[in-house]
Image (cartoon, rainbow, N blue to C red; front, top):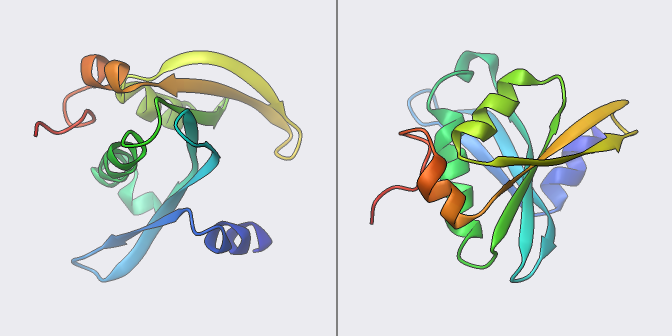
Amino acid sequence: MAFFDGALKSKGCLVAIDAARRSVIGWSRYSNYAPGERIAIGYTFLARSHWGGAANAEMKQLMLRHAFTDVQEVLFSVAERNLRSRRAVEKLGAELAGAENAPRWGQIHVIYRLTPQLWARGAVPGYGPEPV
């Protein structure tokens, strides 16, 4: 529970709500902000009922559009074995940039990076920036 409390207190947390059901279905957050340079998006949780649907893509599009008004790069840290989340980040057009030991989680995390250019050219339809 402390993990969620810290995320909410950070004020960098975006809560996802199913408007039709009027219920919270998940959340994601920003971290490791370096003004003008980069930010990380992660710790995304969605209710199982919304896995594979539009909620994750919509949440990430919103967060990326906002982030790219100030930074040149967005990083994603994903558990190496979490193939579902890795595919979701890859659908955005992100490229694999490395790996890190995540002792807090007891596993290796892979790092993906995304720039506005990668996002515009590499995203699967429905995951990229919306035309202006």
